[in-house]
Length: 273
Figure 1 (cartoon, one colour):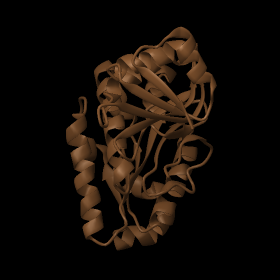
Figure 2 (cartoon, one colour; figure 1 turned 90 degrees about the horizontal axis):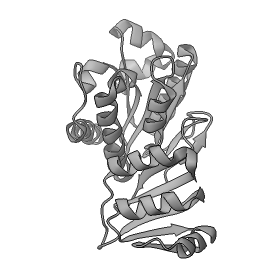
Figure 3 (cartoon, helix red, strand yellow; figure 1 turned 120 degrees about the vertical axis):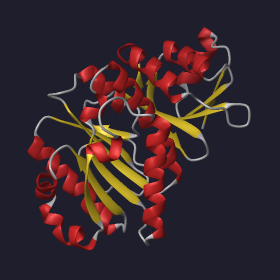
Figure 4 (cartoon, rainbow, N blue to C red; figure 1 turned 180 degrees about the vertical axis):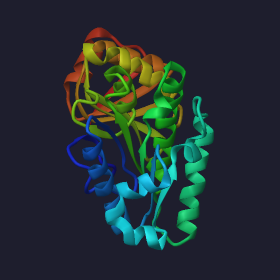
């Protein structure tokens, strides 16, 4: 089971978890990094800390985990070495890089890979932001099935709230105020939705659906909406269109089914669990 929804700390996260962590205070961000990586070490994952800065500077950020640094269980890695120097990422290529690192960690006897990445530089500018959003969902699909966990941190003093919202909504879990909804992967080539899909989230939801490139499973797109608190009719129509007109939304609430029937959403069936 993957952690989803709003979280207030980076402790207690599992082998497949994927967290967006916006921050204002660098010192607070580094505390969260240590929390996240310390748990990964307990779980037996190989851990990476990825950020801008010199090796000595990055080592100072995780100095209290020094024993893991000495053993090789924890590495500090330049952001340029991980994502390349400048420009937008190539989403599939970046996923392949982390997939190879995960498999290497497993081969070395670890339980998987865990990465805490200060990824702000990779989302600066419209083209880079779009590419990194696409990467975030693509790598989330990989994480749902393999033991790779990540904390993706974004600096609010360098990225506008609108950009952070676009990134945050493609993570299953995130810090408070990052996004009112989340679209993320679950095992079995499916996706899940949680939070609230209303007027305030309409624009970002349309972008997220396009970037996620929903895939049919057995001729249908199956969406787990069991943690969805609210959905309006605009979001239901957008979901049906994005799924090619053959979408099943599974929810614990009866309101979405009544709404879909009332307004007549073609290509969408709502099943109440």
